[in-house]
Amino acid sequence: MNLLFLTFVFPLVGFLLLSFSRGRFSENLSALIGVGSVGLSAATAACVIWQFNVAPPEGGAYS
Image 1: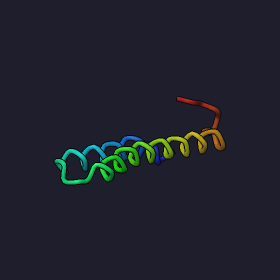
Image 2: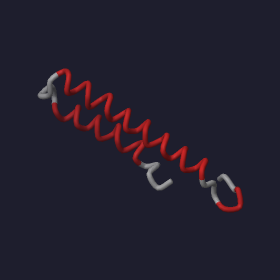
Image 3: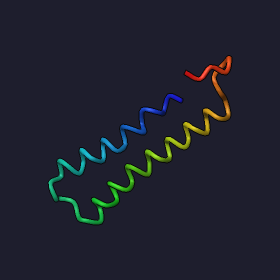
Image 4: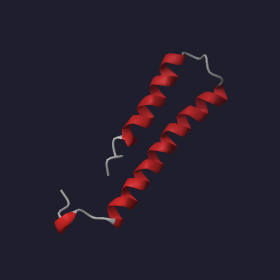
């Protein structure tokens, strides 16, 4: 559950890389960074969801 912050960090890092590169990267590399950052975020979210379903919080309180 402590990996949840990465769902926001990966796209932010991808955005910052693409913003500050100012066209220095090739189109293919830019696409890889953009899609890769969102893909890593989705994979992290899926991992967090799986961990939550396997081991719910004690007492069954979801807040």
